[in-house]
Image (cartoon, rainbow, N blue to C red; front, side, top):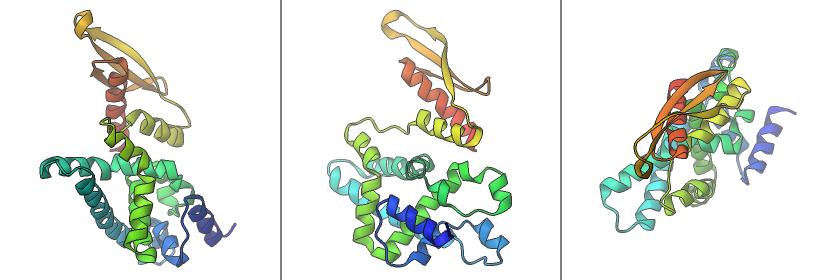
Length: 231
């Protein structure tokens, strides 16, 4: 399948009816690929810059309307959680963006297709492309649609960057293995107990963390592992 057909296939899978295919091809082209082909300007960096601003506007507007009683500081914190690298990487994994990215050989060999920052940048570039191609209102509709699972967590008061899911998707893509967890220790009386969990990859501990439940401790361990492996 030629490149343009692959991009059309991807856009169809993610529910986009587009006008200008070339801008989406650019959104899915990393600078390393463009540099290797001698077309330095034909990469997604400018679209990423634009998409970042458009995403912040859409999320800011959503939060402003959905939470009229929250002060500015709280709205800023929620927006930061919604547009952070972990949230964007989660969207990239959900959309399967890595299958359609064009990377240079060096970046590809270095594991670029599993690098959360690179995948998050591609999502922002796609948002920038949708904005330029379809306009702000259709872009807003699409962004809020792909954000539905995260926004539902926010509405239910349980918004949390799901580091266990992120770590699992990352480790399966990078190492072709699934992390597993074990409770390493616990402390405190029965009515106020805390647990320490450890996450294991390739038979080695890669992160640990404490929580007031085993699930909370596992999330803390996954967060530490995620930050170490993706920094």
